[in-house]
Length: 404
Image (cartoon, rainbow, N blue to C red):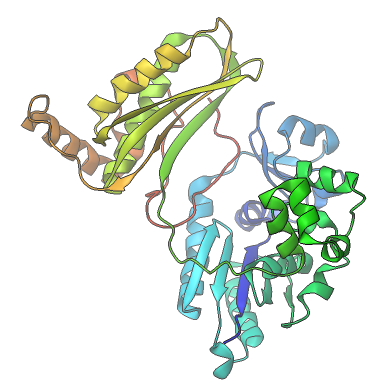
């Protein structure tokens, strides 16, 4: 049976939600992201793109390119709420779907042509999403994920496009090589140095040449340029790690402040582990200094999700890692080697009081939010917290303004 894969993308999602909440922002240049000089553009409206603005750009540069743009800090909770509404509609319509990000979905419609026309069915779903949410949405429909994603990008803004089976190569051929998923700025420049500009040029060369230039990735890019992709739609992807990091608006050398933030980060991530019934066996700390040099250390530990075990180990890692008398720009921690399980009692170190305390604090957090109970030493880290369970199988909300 031939495959039919649908790719759905909510156009400029953060911008669209802000405009939905404030009609005065319609048709005006809008930037969503970090409001400070070190902030990053998480999303930008189409009105700003003519000035050279794009997502991922430093906010300071975006403001210089488009000084008349409105800058909004953004609200992760609001975006999650609207994303959940769209998710529920898609869940009603399709048998198998994958939520690859807060505003992007894949759905496997294979075999549905026996009962419906897949394109018509996808069109009706798109109309329902627009009607019930008021958000613009685009989709691409083809035989695989890669071609459908490219088709969606070609259909934007607020439109739809179908690529019939067998026409994948002709559709991709005239496009810029930069439109192939997996081709970033560095790879694009490498290919341009070879004289490659259009996807057609990649299609015409042997795969071995691409592999010699780009290694294993060259083979993947060659297949994608030829419209070949067998990646399945994955309805659930279990996380193997969980992390958080913060960039300071002003570089700091305040060790007590850094320690307090690390404690708050560890405390919150440990709660996320317990909430998701997960244990970690590897922890790491990352530091980026003011000269942009970045260092990290990791440590293997017995499986745990307990604050009183994780916090001292994180602080020890930080003490060993922080060995330069330079201002710090960013710090972060990461828990990896995650497995499903509940915290095991240590017969020598744990008491019934400690376990009861964890249960009580976690219940309060579930009812009133992650930041309802905090250690006093971590109270200065005001932005530490999450909007949802990171182990619910959904893609995380990614905002570019998590600053301190």
